[in-house]
Figure 1: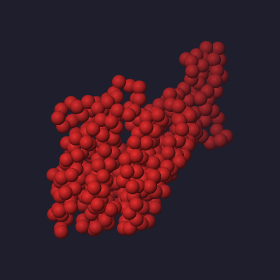
Figure 2: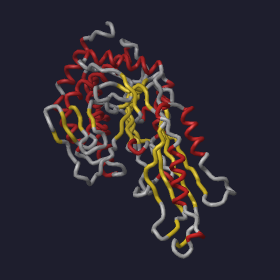
Figure 3: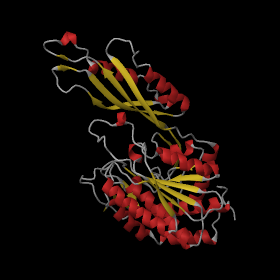
Figure 4: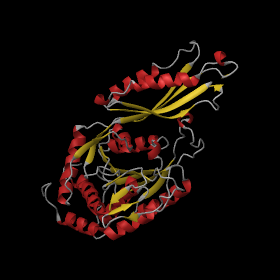
Length: 412
């Protein structure tokens, strides 16, 4: 059988998944109705338990990998400093021979658990809006149904599913666990698939920028603004200058972005600020460009014996860049060919966004991280999913898993 042909088994898999459209929509309804915003452990625990049950029914061995604490300085104004480190759910199929495939996804969303955007609402026959509908509960639905149909068809594949609960905030809790599991799979010649949503036209992402989080802190000297202004040293003024200096590190042609958002300064207008802070994010296309950003930020720091104001830098690389390697291009091409067989005409693209696929590929595991359905308006209160893309994307995943085991498409 050539890569451009379907076997009887593959045709059967596609037909079975198409017949599950209604069941997929029902699952999506239930998943979206569970609030899983960042740190909302009640909802996350409920959703985690639901996923555990579905994966256990497939005969997978289930365990939980402890999360790590987030560095204290990363907590921004308005965020809780006492959030628990949520565990990763790991499910390992019983099949042990051949290369193992690592499937990853995240349970958390960016949406307010107490907000008005709480459920799935159909806006047309083929589209629905809901919190996390496309990012990424729709992807988790397609993954579950793909695995269940493979099991129905008596297809035994070595897969591991790893689900975290802090992807939307940078996977600081789960990053070490993701890297370790990815490293294990890479050592066995495996592949990685992450269930992030496809690009709007269904294309898959083959290259992503890297991401780092940083904080600039300026220390000055407090004084009463009216009586002793000249005795004070404003940390706010110093921080403003440092922010403008950091902005000079932006190089859009090179793919380098340095963006500063949350700020913290004095508590009153009549106090010369003794301390001010700014939190930022940097994006870069490779390690060399990251090194330039880091060097530029470190140049803003003060010498220990310098007069006030002092500037200090905290910096954390949380997702290395994900380059388009030859192996990545080959995997994408195989998935594109499979897509054509199930009626999905797709291509490849790049993204300035990051995902846990960055972590997986950094450990040597070739990873395609946009295997989820089509949709849009991610992180907005009109986030939507194209319902009619779920069954085809599930079929693409199922066939990619099947062919990774038997070598029909050269994925193994």
